[in-house]
Image (cartoon, rainbow over all chains, first blue to last red; front, side, top):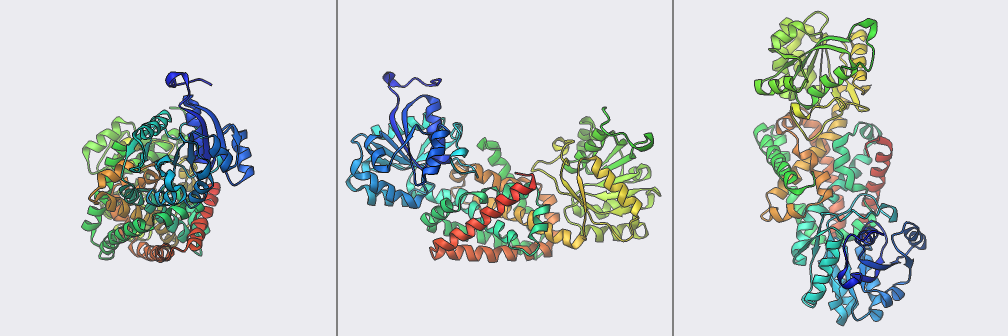
Amino acid sequence: MVKKEQPLQGRPLIDVLAVVGVGLIGGSFALALRRAGVVGRVIGVGRSQETLRRAVDLGLVDETASAQDAAQQADIIFLSTPIGAMQGVLQSMQPYLRSNALITDGGSTKHDVVKAARLALGEKIAHFIPGHPIAGAETTGPEAAYAELYDDRNVILTPLEENSQADRDRLSRIWQSCGARVMFMDPYVHDQVLASVSHVPHFLASVFMGQVASAANSDQRFALAGTGFRDFTRIAAGSAEVWRDIFLSNREAVLAELDEVRLALDAAQQALQAEDGQALYDFLERAAVARRFWASRSGLK
Amino acid sequence: MVKKEQPLQGRPLIDVLAVVGVGLIGGSFALALRRAGVVGRVIGVGRSQETLRRAVDLGLVDETASAQDAAQQADIIFLSTPIGAMQGVLQSMQPYLRSNALITDGGSTKHDVVKAARLALGEKIAHFIPGHPIAGAETTGPEAAYAELYDDRNVILTPLEENSQADRDRLSRIWQSCGARVMFMDPYVHDQVLASVSHVPHFLASVFMGQVASAANSDQRFALAGTGFRDFTRIAAGSAEVWRDIFLSNREAVLAELDEVRLALDAAQQALQAEDGQALYDFLERAAVARRFWASRSGLK
């Protein structure tokens, strides 16, 4: 393996990495660290033996173990399960954590994950630094993982007051070695912002997709759906289990944002109802200008 | 120019083509016909001399002319202006149409365009076959045009009872030479189906984009928006003028579909409000299965 970055003092940044949940997010994390040459051994942990075997075959992880065995060996533990499963995993690892262990996660909400981690880890909460890589795809499972997933993407860390500066720096370096940009943020602010730009779009895309699919002439509709439909609904193909947990764990922020969207929808629909061409134009032009401006800034055109 | 397809009897399918509105849709139509080697001369018509000049420089059209001059010369007239401008264009062309002229359009709604065409063309209505290529992009203007836009895309024709079979066949061959698949449909059915799979997604994407842009912390939101946001909002960058006309011209069908989407949104939001994990999962899974099924069938993954 080509080492793209020389680890400090000839030792890898991570001796033993445990990845709990070896799908797109966890598998890509392992592959990105391998690509950077900063990880020694990678242990996969998960519910399905079949999935774990595929992760080994694909080279995402070197071996598999139970949560307990993995906790006894790992320096870094990355949780990439659905959010609803994290508390149970942390509970089963808690008694066996190494003194230098650093745990982080890839969950799309942070307030709820922090609450679950405090309950599960108790006095060992300082080991856990919550995180959220803003990266993903509509694909799932070990086969979807790839080393470039985090290149130039934002990773948000929402550290706890108990976390040491040394551990914060260590986790920042790890994500940077994956190609990502690291940002620090308050967990509540994170959840409100992500409700807006990630969770609400998924909710709306799924609502819309369900509405089209349940129409009497859905076959005819699908036959005429073009690239706009394709882009607008792409995220609706995501894992129902993952997204159920995201919505439940960020329920209040998502509901608050949905109410805001409804107000905007009311106004736009009223303009259409009233055949108010100027109001319609203004609403569409504001959205178009904002979207073009965002595209020019985001690097995600 | 390489001729990919030999025209019948050594003559091009179209001697003189007039394209009214030389942007993405009209410019790509001209380029696709040139690529197939089935068009002689292409005349560009439009409101802006500046845009027309760019269309000539880009090789979309050979020359420019007024609507009247173009009507006097063209065998085929393609209208790719915003829908609200079509009646005026047809009125100014009506007295000068050649006896063999065939007029068609690329408008995203059909009932309203038919109404405008009947008013403008009167006894010459048989010249007009309404059409709608299901293709597009968030880009606009002559620079956005490309010859491959219609490859493997559906083009819907909604012929009038006045149209001759010979003209229907002629227009089918023209679109097929652009690489498209031709379908025939009733204009009302077209408008209802397109309201669902094209107009409503655009309306919702624009509403959502406007809501995010008007939030107090919109900068922070945009900074954390990822690929899901990108895909979901891409269509909101489209031309406000074009889409205002689409919404106004298909107002009733769009409002009816929006009401259906609201009902689905109510149900999903209620499940989230009630923390009903099973109902949320079921709604998300139905949408995900439908989206994956559509992607596997559509060729638009």
